[in-house]
Image (cartoon, rainbow, N blue to C red; front, side, top):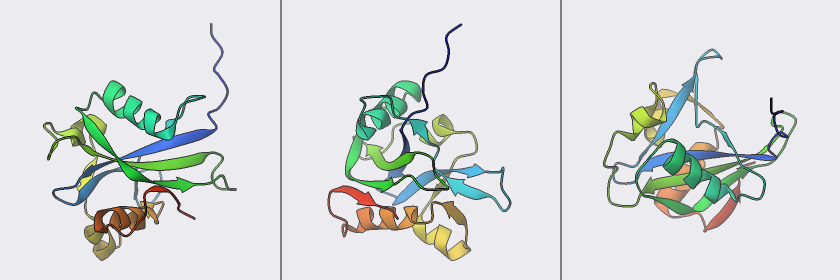
Length: 150
């Protein structure tokens, strides 16, 4: 029996976006009440970049069609609440729209949201700064590169 490897030093949270409709997919975390909507986390393998981990997860594991990874990414550092560094990477279809129902591929209870819907309804999102990252990217006021989400 193979022993599990060491815990990954970092995780990636690929944010599947639909740039034409200005929306993105979130999955409910029903383990907490009230429900918190989030992007699932996946380990980054040793020596792998967060962008490569995003492509690996979305293309190989979920079998999504060709995608484009945004030049902006969000980073949450290690903290008392978070034992690993986390990267939020925005991924859009390589063409104008996703050619399949990516919501079903991500998770059966995944849902498309806009940042306005989440804010107007007071829906809890983890982390709450995710909405600023998505708005900043969509509206073009964030510079390319890794942005701290602290």
